[in-house]
Image (cartoon, rainbow, N blue to C red; front, side):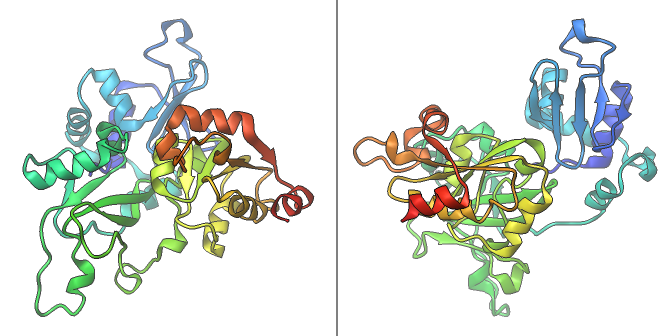
Length: 335
């Protein structure tokens, strides 16, 4: 899993670009890929959320992806470029209080035996990758998101929580926020007793009902899609989040309330449109515009969710079959 050292990333950007900070913690500079836009400072980097975007060309990529494009190298080579920087030369005053806090604190530790999804060439590694590619996922994209797998058994006779900490044979789906690991979901790929295994709350200090998968999207996009499951959110793209259940907790609602997102479209699986509408109704007083989409309108045969129908058909459904949710319309739809 590649975590960006924000101090070193800041040092690299400052060395190569003449940056100026905005009020929203974006650092603007000239887009090196847009020569006609030189002098207009339409590109910006956000170190807390590790994103680079350009208001002029529509470019929007993760920080490491931008470095790889600029230096014409792979993602791993881009990470090495950042790591070669000297973080000691960075003045904390140059960054926002939030950014410095994110640099100095640590998130949840990954489970024992974790390997990045692209690492390893044994049968277990290949099986993990095969499980994901069969569902249509791009492994390079998943690697950027921190996906991995566990190939070692956690055994410690003196640890009463040993079984809870053992994620051997599970794909690890990370929930990252502001560049830090908040939580992770374990998805079996070898026939374990539990299909899904999550960190024990007593061990991790946080439960799945307290987080959103890809929560940073709420700060990086005016409009987001909300799904029940992470696989559908990954399929839909970087502007999609998931709640791991149709019933929101107060902490999940607070994440939406604190974010600047303006429009949320809750996308329901086939047969679950009423649950999607009920979820959407809980967001009415929090988000400016709330919509709900029924994927059942476009599913064929046994198809039931975004992962099964793919990104393009999911986006077509959102475009053609979304309904604005108000208290009145919501009550009519679930009655």
